[in-house]
Amino acid sequence: MSGADTRVLTAALVPQTAALLATALDEDPAYEDLEARAAGDDPYHHVHMMAVRPELQGQGIGGALLRDVLRDVDASAPVVLTTHKPENVVFYRRADFEVVHEGRLVDGWKLPRSGPNFAAYSDTGRALGRTYVHSRVHAIVLESYAALDKSDPELRLLYGETGPREGGPFEPHRTHQTGTSVDFMTPVRDGRGAPAVLPTGPHNKFGYGIDFDRQARFEDLRIDFEATALHLALLAKTAAAHDDHYHVDFGVRCARTRSRSSG
Image (cartoon, rainbow, N blue to C red; front, side, top):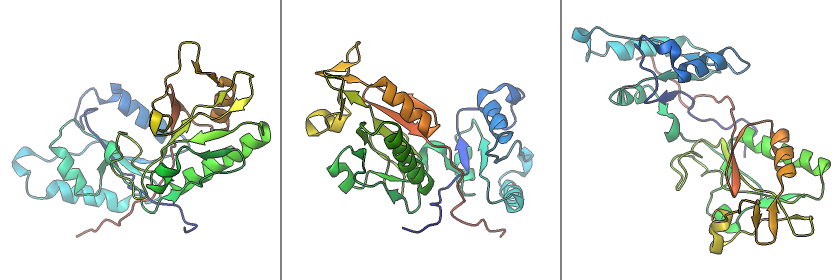
């Protein structure tokens, strides 16, 4: 495990959003999000518009234009673009772009089996290589657990699935392909109000098959919303809440895995 940041393909192709030549591009929510992020603390390059006259298409002109653009950009920031034409996907893949839900990871870092206040959701899942993350996510997760241990040392937490070492498709998830997605199993308390650990095993799909009722209870356990909020605050990231776990996507800047040739 090296000290250098794990690299992922960061150039992103987002289908079914805005067309490169759409007249209403500025009104598209995806485009507005790109603009907002570009103006923030985590900048990236956005290919806004590129076109080749119809009678000149199919001669390699578009590829040459794109290579010329990519050759001059700062390699420390990712490059993104949007298109609504599925046939364009093949073209952009030739330039090392990837569809955002079809990414991959290079030399992922495996989360530890356990720590003072946390453990993996399943030794089996971990042994099968389902708990790898991007190196910076690895640091964020462990630092948040350490901070949580200082804030409330009685808490005992489980992290769930993250992804394979080299990323890519990760059933049954649609995400978890670039090492920047982490499932955290919901913190719970027992009937006496003491911190407890969510039961995980084959009988309940390693925790993913648990359903809480409308009172946030499962058997003699109840969701510890305070611990959940504290953990999220320490992660300083947004999360999509689930019944049995919450899923966090980390926005980290990554380097391209391959240099782009000018030839």
